[in-house]
Amino acid sequence: MLDNLKEGVTKPDLYEPTPNTVYAATLAHYGVVADPARVRDPNRKGSVENAIGHTQDTALKGRRFESIEEQNEFLERWESKWAAPRIHGSTRRQVQAMFEEERPVLQPLPSQGMQYFTEVKRTVCDDSCVLVDRSSYAARPASIGSRCWCASSISASRSATCRHTVLRSHTRVDRPGTIVLPMGERVFNPSRQTQRVLTQAKAIGHDAARLCELLFLVEGRVGQRKLWGIVSLADRYPRRLIDRACAQALTDGIHSYSHVKRITEKLVAEALEAIDHAEQSPQLALALIRPADVYAQLFSRCAAAQPSMSLPSEGTSHDPQ
Image 1 (cartoon, rainbow, N blue to C red):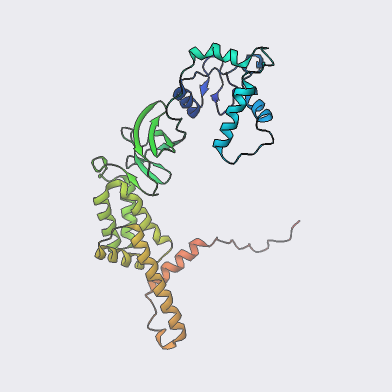
Image 2: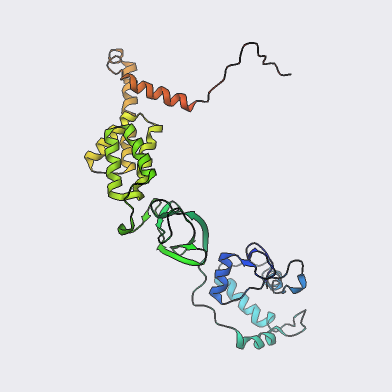
């Protein structure tokens, strides 16, 4: 019997209390049944928790141990020589005698301990995956757009669940950005998000559109994250340089967002170095003047980043009243 604490009972109820998912899995693993006590009825609550305080105050108080093995050895000796033969304060009976009465009905412990896990709720993306800890895992047969409970255990295993029914289990991956999705389950028909990101890629340039279309043809919808990464570079860098970086990535045969980003940053660094060199050599300043559309893009980006300031109208006083 336990209190209606959140770690044990998610929703208290007199007839059908809802146990915490991890706590319920722990009970099932050890073959234990939980019976939450009634609210504001302490007489129905067991007194087994006193054993923890009794052990801490009697056996462990003021003692330090170099290892867990040393502590367990001491507690085993304390249990057999002092705790078990003592007379219990409430029942007025020997603890060892009461244990011998219960021994025939006690079950052996499982060979392995309980595998703790955490649970989060995720939406199935349009690539039929759920995103957990920055990695994607296949969620079929869950439909796109549905909500699933994803349990992540420390034993390197994951499972997408619909609360009680396990839909999918996967081996946990440690590298962020990894996609655990069989090739036969990848979705290659374009969605509205696909059309949107390809339109933004065309606005950057011809080579950017070619690279994004190639990435989608090879990886399907699951590769749309790379496409969004490429088009998001336009928020920080000139589109002409991004398009040149995409052309270089196509030539190198390395079709990835990180490669395009590295090339773009390199081109920007070279452009800034050329500008610094032009300031030292006035003769090169006129040769380094770029087309007007490059400066127009830079001005538009800076104007969008700065907050707009409204000018006061005539006759408006700024003195606080």
